[in-house]
Image (cartoon, rainbow, N blue to C red; front, top):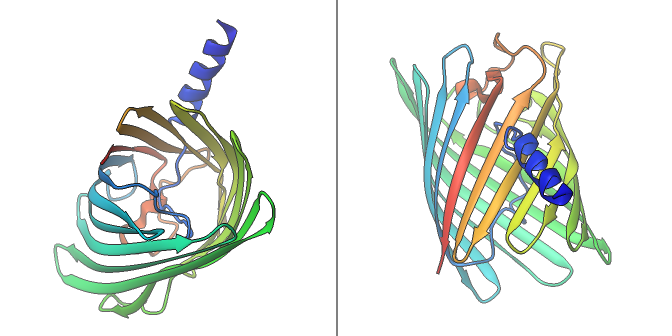
Length: 263
């Protein structure tokens, strides 16, 4: 009974704990299975109202490489973002790599603009169960949007895999706008996985520190997976703290639900 109560408490705590502008190393971002997935999410509050997201993707594994074709749409009261992209990753027992290419359309009531963004990541084992990675993600090689050209997310991450438990930490510089940290861990069992992370952000241009937590709960039911991700900010983010497209950072809490079917 006590074990069940602890698990239920962890589920409740981690369901509201996912960072809005999700940043990951392209070398580790793809599930190594043939799957079809659908994603829906809402980020509440913010100076432009709620943000809603909807996405579809398809994973295919072949010759130790995983490819993903994906579509993602995001909308708030004044802005729209539509993305179409392809990601690929591969590796062996000690080294890992990944890349990403996507076409982004941004529109509001006055204009419509296009961006071409790319990503590239690497990782390698430095000990038997410790992986160190570095990456450049969502880097704009073409942009009609002012101030976005040659801006991307730069990061390093460290993962310690202890079978059931994984420790994870990362340090990221987002679009030359702010620094983002992640520190936490996750548990992985046959039918359920869950994790929680401390994810503070420091906005160097305005001198603001935003204290956030993020996390996930993943249920595995046969060929189906249901992943609930959420985030929560302990600090006031009611005013604009970044000049990034759609300003995901300016929302105090929200969630994503992802449903996958494995083939």
